[in-house]
Image (cartoon, rainbow, N blue to C red; front, side):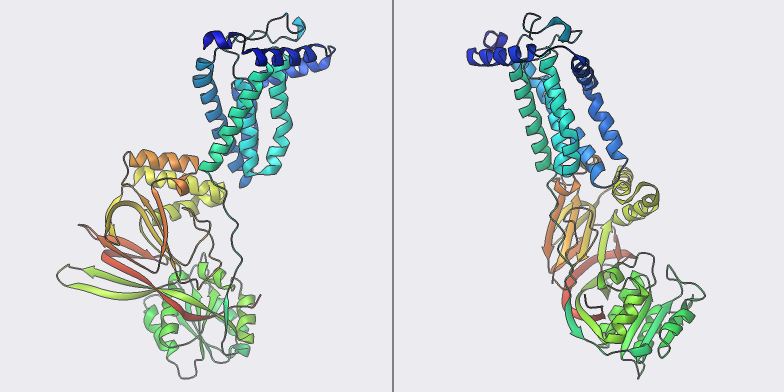
Length: 498
């Protein structure tokens, strides 16, 4: 093989010399210095590392494009230099082939076939462009310029550049298979239904949790101004929230139940609304207001308009049956789940992400939070639907969340009839290393450690010590088993028509 490629096969050699003669016929000028400098800037990937650093300053797709480009470049460089330069040794062009003043100095001593500069340039530009096409289009002239500069400066034959570029393109496409393009989120869809019109809050009974994330001394008064005809019950520290909600829902003139508080408070109110066949008006009184955002009442103005017009929709609820206490005499309780339930390290991950988000932005904060959480955490052994797993995280969402990977952000449909089950396991060998690598490279969603499925019922049992369970942000300790099922369209909630 060495003899075959020393000068290149006949037709390739003739093709190369024909193109090189064309390049050598170009008159000298400032462009010679330009291509020498461009070629030198790409040595050891300096040009692309600098471009990635600039792109990483912008959160979102530019930052992901930078990461994909660097990974593609690393793959292309490794394949080119470790594999093909060893298998296909070839002599580089000599001064007799090009004007001496164009030659790069010092001339590289490694095999000419294939071009590592070209492989890295095309890999980075295409890898970044597959994530954000505008970035790829901006990088394309520089990448093509680097590839051409290797011929212009006598460092490579044209066929070396073509082969290297093909390797770079292949590396970029491989990383895209590794990181599949996220499909677009579906549009918001709600199943409309009728509910009592509540002008001025007439017939509306509202429970206000004073421990809610956004409660102030003016909250109750402000709500009374907005709903002058409504009954408003404030629940103070030391009072039973569940008892207050049940008593409020049981009032004779209550036609609709309102709730001001976080997702845990809203879940308790939803259970009472379902039990008493009342429509629920969710007021954004918590820190994150996940369910209020999903229902379209993320602002008080939206909630007031929907209640006054009697605009409503239906949502599924999750029924969480929890078994706690001693195995010989367990205690069983049913909870309503509106959003999510989780076991394992997920609550710690969310807490860290929220702490880091103001400084780093949500995507990067999520990566850093996952890395810190899993570096220090340990998996839990559980049985999920009869199958034993070592789990870092078991996450169950009420409804399909998007994107369809490890980091759910939004839920456009509230009555799709399914549970969104996501598990990150430690069943595989080198589990921690696999996990940390997938977190570092942003491939948790496509890794073998991640298991995604949909179900209408899930049962999880502890092995040995009890587990900790979080339902809509509320933690429960000492849980021995949990069964989660879907109750289709059990809840009527006020939602503005769009």
